[in-house]
Length: 145
Image (cartoon, rainbow, N blue to C red; front, side, top):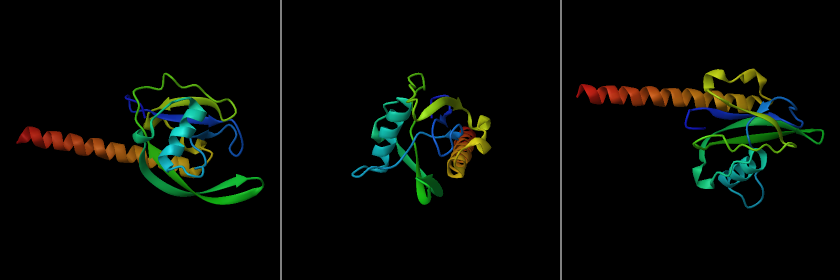
């Protein structure tokens, strides 16, 4: 996410889900933590060099991934990182054909290649909205004291 509260959404340049929306990500390689994989995949796919320490675990969701003619049951892990802006995005054309910085209210959830990605983005938007309401309520309560 950037400082304006937008999320980075990509358009997939390969199957499965060619031309559909996704998030930077991929397979965790041997010896990597989830955060290390996020940092590597984000750099490889969109050219953003985000330190592993900036990634925080958000949630996991089951998924099915078609690979080499077989549907693999997977567990998708979702992490969040905050950066100032997306101005340095540099796409890896074999992975990503386009990118968008969208507010949660602008996300076309039905256009995602994987329902797990759409659901994680939806739930993150809900959580952030609730956190904002709680912060505003706390601020309001503080003003009343």
